[in-house]
Image 1 (cartoon, rainbow, N blue to C red):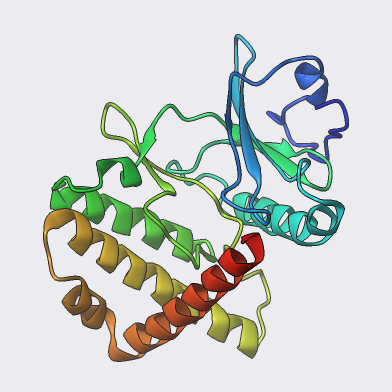
Image 2 (cartoon, one colour):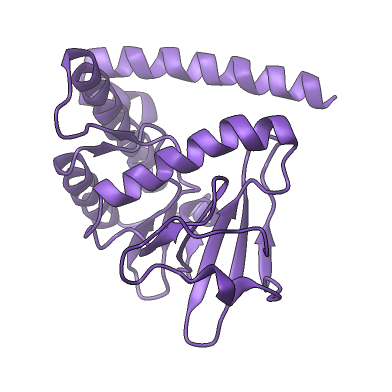
Length: 233
């Protein structure tokens, strides 16, 4: 981690010197060549998660990696104060950022279990708070919703988040509204999936337009996943 340089000047930002010579106690490798690794460090008085594209190839690292880290940094800054986000500890060079390490498991780990509907009411309130601050996640997924042992909820991975900004034009505002609706559709899908409801009916209940837009997005994502699969093969 010696190549990491801090770009964060705010109080509470991680001093990158603390990571020099420290081995991560855990590592989650990116799912494919376009995804970042997440490294977890125990610094004694602080536990830190570092999202990094350092191990990706030069092309991905210096294009997609830089862009996504910049986007995610902007989203954390815009959403500052939302308790359901891990504390943002700063951008660490062009291809990495750091947050608080939250000891929790993703909802994905509860696959097949029936969860209390109230959990998703709380998640809806968190989304409302983010939307109110001008941040839409755009790709809410059950891998990115964390549940602690005491039942607290956290959201991670803001790489695809869309930040409305202080003076948005017509197009930016329109896209934000689309992505906000996408968050609501993904929440409806997740709620149905983990409470035994009908997924298609839940999606349709958000709005016909949002449901249609979501279906188109799912088809595009499936196509991209197949393309990535062929490249890996």
